[in-house]
Image (cartoon, rainbow, N blue to C red; front, side):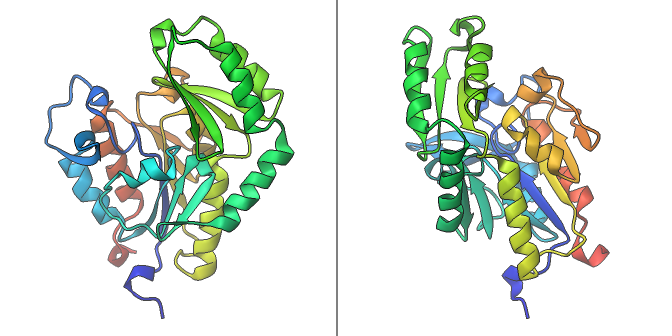
Amino acid sequence: MLDSSRLRRHTLVATDLDRTMIYSRNAFSAHADVPTVCVEHLEGAPLSFMTTAAALKMQTLTEPAAVVPTTTRTIKQFARIQLPGAPWRYAITSNGGNILVDGVPDLRWRIDIDAKVRAGGATLSEITAELRSRIDDSWVSKFRVADDLFCYLVVRPKEVPEGFLAEWDAWCRARGWSASQQGRKIYSMPDVVCKSHAVAEVRRRLLDSGELGTEAPTFAAGDGALDAEMLRAADFAIRPRHGELEHLNWTHPNLTVTRATGILAGEEIINWFIKGAPPLDER
């Protein structure tokens, strides 16, 4: 018999975090004037927020749904977030490169991912060496390697050379990688490191353990190009009316787009999840 932490859920919810669920003050939107709660601090300073209503509803969502935070953040960066509803049975970090099980990285999954990266094209060292040859301090603030899986730049967007992203993406795609920009960050990512693959693996495990009903649909939310495959693979998907996918005018038959932008879009997304995953006693 399953204990209270292993109740069978009727919905799987895979959600991106930054600029989907949680927002820096710069991402609030000029029209947002609502009560908020801080869900992340960095070196003692408040960094990321949700509306108070969204935070309360996020906790409620974990009752009918198996919620899986799904982020491009590293394990260390994810650990800073105090997302309502925790602790999580599963969480996905590093864009799908790591699966956390009860907070602990799954080594079998990571070993398999590393093997696929090696077999899929260029190595991380080859990518970083080529990327360093193409950038300079006039427009790049930081160069970071994330969990020994991928790398990203923190840039001054208005100073990025015209055509850089398209040219770099083309070079990467010929070698089993791709490049995309989300705000001030430009990511270089192996094709096999993908949120949708990790979500599918978590779903398989939840079904095998009986923690998810066999007919349970998958809902997903995200705002960036790195979320697109996860949204496409879900039964039902939603994206906010801002971010990289909005800029690309990205759509799909299973996709809903929020009416709101900024932090209010995060609240709208949670309401949409709850509508799709009514309380267990209503099933």
